[in-house]
Length: 141
Image (cartoon, rainbow, N blue to C red):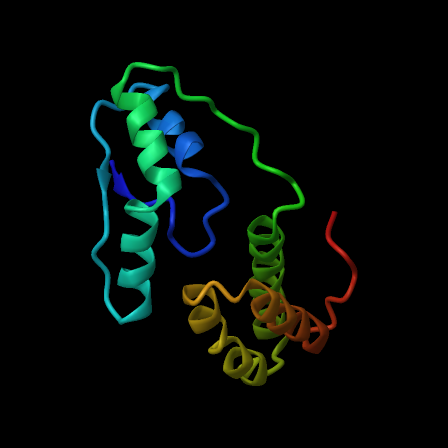
């Protein structure tokens, strides 16, 4: 497995991340710090070598059990992911009905840079704006 708990939209702390792998049969986790751009590689490296990650590595390497913690349902990343799915579904509905969703697509071009920079409040506002444009203002459970 090669990944990094510090990737944009991650909803998990480092101990849980490692537990999800090692507690369920994984024998090797390669922590990825390489990526394109300027911000994402910095973020991945800071995460992989941060205090939280080092504590989780130490716990695992000293043989102490890793804990699979529950992910909070009110986690901003999960909330944004659910809203993004609604945006995609709304755009697909518009396509099928013959409406032009290009204005929504243009707005959503700003989503990835916000996610990469960890600006979740701004990202959620942008996604909410896209949902409003699509007429998808009812709240998801």
